[in-house]
Image 1 (cartoon, one colour):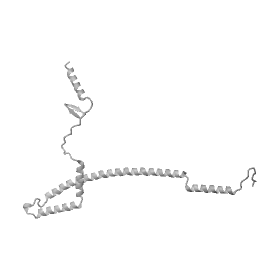
Image 2: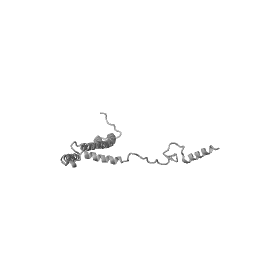
Image 3: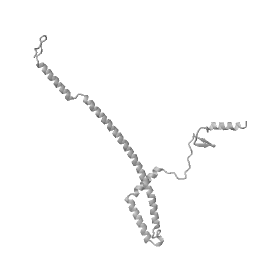
Image 4: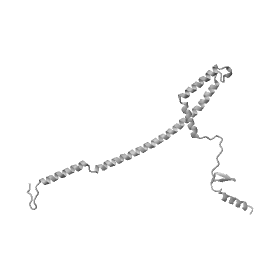
Length: 197
């Protein structure tokens, strides 16, 4: 009797929460629930909008591929070098081996290469979608052309069976000729037979 009571309470609890029916999403009081959405997981990596990041990377890649970028980069390097060669020793921040300049150029290149690749991937995806749409449009155009070709062939076959103006004119001319020939021939009287020729 002592063992029946905990079993009965566990059975009531299972019936009340519906915990015996398959896998579930949430735990409530140690029991999993399917009727509620799962709580958002905490992530160690910050969340970002991939579309906005892609658009930004395309803008940067587009700028890196322009003459304006090359001119500005050249001017900055020239100013950097001139400053660090001609300025007083106390004001030079990157003396002769220009290690800091090398580090900055390497850093710029290490960021530029992945951004350019990301922009190329996005462009490739857009090209793929455009090609797929063009392929579907070409298939529709081919199907429409084939349909129109069949319809034109059916019309030609149908027109072959329809009387034309020239055919009707020639038939009427033949009838008029036959009528003229009948009028020109003398009529045989009833009871008289025509002599054999």
